[in-house]
Amino acid sequence: MKLIKHITLLLFVLSTAITAAQVKFEAKVSKTKLGINERLRIDFEMDKDGDNFTPPDFAGFDVVGGPNTSVSNSWLNGKRSFSKTYSYFLAPKKRGKITINQATIEIDGQIYKTQTVAVEVTEAVKRPNDPYNADNIAEDNIHLVAEVSKTNPYLNEAISVEYKLYVSANTGVSNWREIDNPKFSDFWSQNIDIKGLKVENGTYKGEEYRYVVLRKTVLYPQKTGKLDIEPLSLDVTVDVPTNRRDIFGGRLMTKVHRTVSAGAKTITVKPLPEENKPSDFTGAVGNFDFKLKASKNELNATESLQLKAEVTGNGNLKLFKLPKLTVPSSLEIYEPEYTENVRTTLAGMQGSISDSYTVVPQFKGKYPIPKVSFSYFDLKTESYKRITSDEIIIDVLEGPNNNATQDNSLTTAAGNKQKVILSNDQFAFIKTDANLKPIKPKYFFKSIWFWSSLLLPLLAIPLAMVYRKERDKRAADVFGNKIRRADKLAKKYLGEAKRNLGQKEAFYVALEKALHNYLKATLHIETSEFSKDKIRELLTSKNVETTVVDEFVGILKNCELARYTPITNVEMQQDYEKSAKTISLIDKQIS
Image (cartoon, rainbow, N blue to C red; front, side):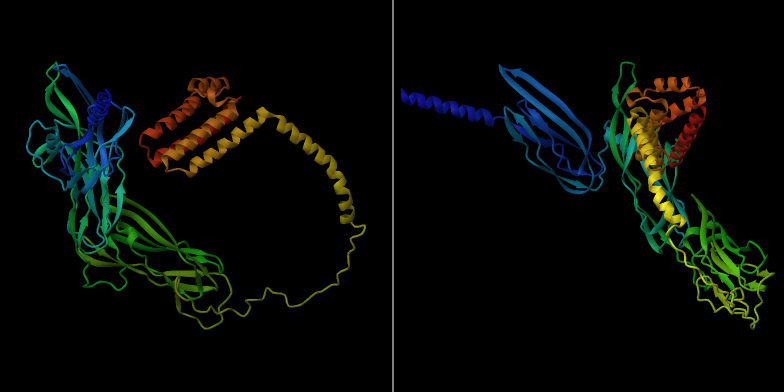
């Protein structure tokens, strides 16, 4: 009898262990080797339902789809079959061997884990030609192209790169994001702002396509030889047609993710010719004009004038130095103030740069400012050119005479100056005859300061009592203090918004706080009452013009929407100026 009991207990334990061992939880991938431009599907399957499913972190991948859950529950010959699957679609971020970590789930109080899965990501691959495969359709109908304006420029000659996304007529693009940005390490570069994407018609490899220009960049090569322009890569969400149709016969669309790259471009940069290169050449390449101008030609000694050396035109305006001025040593010349007014288009930099020198003459006389030369490399004629300014005569009408022999030596703003020869009456303004008088001693006792020091503390007592009474009264004014605090906060946040111009999120948070605190101080309402209808009603009741009220409510709407839409620095500046102007108008009109 005891033997039967032991056998029964053993069978029960074994059956429980077998039942527990039958729980299956595993990870399956669609492939273990894929290209960087392919997608990986991973399924986490279990044969018994569980709770608290936790996927791995998918390091090295972007999750482009999922989790999708599917459940299968069937009976066959009286035997139940159950299956539950969590599916994810992954896009690799990089090449190499990537390990997908364990997923976990709780089934019947126990934690189960999948095995780690290793996949190898290779360079981009060409998929087999399947006319109904959505990925293949996307690959054949969407292309990212980098168009370079010139592949053999001179050193410091401007070239442009336009990145165009071509899409065929039977597909569409709903979104994209940059995953690999070019660094332009061997170039001076500047992106050209694109305000709104414009869809245009064009051709790609002889076929009709639509395209948008995603990015425009101007480059100035800083080295000679072969230079690589790194590729731009995008992850694009593409709408492609399928072989399925709706009840009206229209073809159904599906969304797929596609990685497109413009590919690297190589340009060959030519050095500037050494033949006939001027000795004062500082690297200016383009088409320029040079002028040396004086703010005035006649003045008195110790007055000042401005000498301005200015280069205007098209070329690498920010990448060379202006020539230095030389002046007679009797003129005091200071370090120049550099200014630039340059705008950058696809054709390169255009505008002007200048050095403005302050010059102060010391003596009466006529002083010549020698001619100044500026040399540059002209791309049109592929030769060096020189522009020389006219000589300028500075006529100092009044001032001390320089009795010493005329000193014709020159000095520059950056160089060591010759010693200035001073006139004999240079220190004539200093008196040499003393007129000294004895000082009578003054006693503090019974003086005005003596009596003031006695009486002032007595007078301060009633003033202190009045001050304390007013302070206590102000402290007891809870409502008034709220108003004052809100007004103070409005000024603080409006200032904070100005400091954060260019940082969209921080700017609009500060601006919204400033507007809300202004309403607290002006309308005496709490945050809970900040509905736009309530604000409109209260401002109107305070005799504020309808246009001003609409302007204020519009700014509040902009603060709410701006966090979710692209905003330029110009628009932020406009919103700030509009806010300050509207608050000023409300202050004037409110009653």
